[in-house]
Image (cartoon, rainbow, N blue to C red; front, side):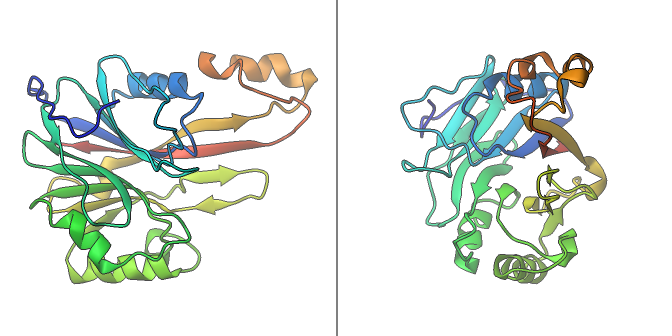
Length: 259
């Protein structure tokens, strides 16, 4: 587990850096899923919220460094998985009540993986603590902030706080036309996983894509089982569960390219 240790690696020479965000609702048992996604989409930095890991549980990805901030009680937790070839240091925790783990890259950009539980009301001071870390900051996470500006049907308190904050401070919220959570069980769709961009001038909505990760999959029935299993990635074919149920959940990632 990587904590506050300084990490200096060979500076990444490629022009573009691919950054992804995912609310995992626990990474336990999903290591293969994460590694597969990062490989096929060539992700350099992966910010994960709601890791739900106990401190004693190992979480390692080959050729990457995993920085974790476990909650030390049930739920929550955040992580950043970063390619070993990217020079960076881990920054100390701030006073923000938003759960976070934060890295400073060799080029001065600060990247933070964040999670704010639905029971917590975000304050401007929580955002200030993170945004004041550097001139260029990227916050990626689940803020449980709903607002019609980023395509939610209604606003909640956190959404209104965040909207007022980014408007006042000329900060950009990146989102897509696709919600980051879909369920056939209750037809829920939410847009609470956000990329918040301060002063990274070459990052815009058009650079952000929304890509699916299947986190719960029950096949529709024995008569279609072989066909549906053939369509699943290999790491999911042993995780399909009770085939008598007819539901699935898609948790989407947001993936952006820094040029």
